[in-house]
Length: 248
Image 1: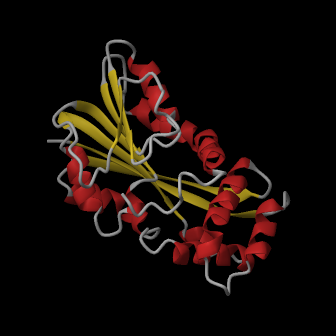
Image 2: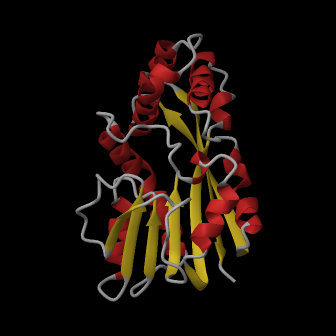
């Protein structure tokens, strides 16, 4: 996970994470609720970011349950009253095995170019038999295909700025879970538009700003940001792919 693209010490990163929680936690919570997460469950939150889903899981499972939250950098949730916080790399560090009813990750696996199957296998090993792993990933393909050239070019630039991430891979998420040995794999997609000058547009703007110094010189960053700041603009948004499967 050392290939993660945005430095956690970047001055706007906490704000960016908070906006991600505001915009996308409802989707995540709906999926976890559909899976039946309930009192007494043992939960592993991987790549916990700002800690919001770990907090929701804590409240959901109650005092008879347990939540372990892990990340490469735990600065934004280290003091959260969850059962345990660990700063680890899932690709190299030991993780508790055969212990959890649900393992959740969001916006994590695309950072592990070429290693997604191995990562899922490692995470699946932490599940109890019959436990569920659920992952959500973003796909920018529709945004790169926008008819607004300046908007499409931003995402071409972001791809180039993050060579170790694979933003085309998320459509393979269900197949990855199957290849990792999970059973009863299911999946769904959530598609939307992004309107300028909204919290979701601000997430995208901040992501671009964080990568500005790495983007190719031929990208007109300012023209693309103008689209994100224009409240009258509607552009193709992130496609979210979510998949889940059971340990057999």
